[in-house]
Length: 135
Image (cartoon, one colour):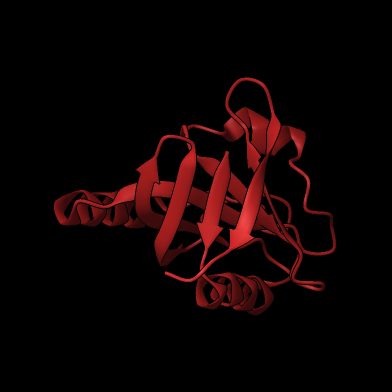
């Protein structure tokens, strides 16, 4: 399984993570899904509504629903959910795994280093290859 991430979107995710630090950021990636290839073409940052945003993320429900409805109307697929681990590592936490609700890759970014890794969190946790690729 692979997610194609255009460099401008990858850079925007890192900037979002750095801007929201020390809180975790959260956002969605939309584009197309073909077999096991997820291609991001658009990013939608969302407010983090978690009670403890320094340790967790929770996409603000109204903003999440609005983004999903807009994408559906445009014919875009949800291709990934991203969030950050300020001061941490780009590995899924127990909470990340327990809270994974969507059958898409989850990207985790460390704001300090900009390192971003992808994971499938539903069912068996497994890595997802993140490829920087042009649109």
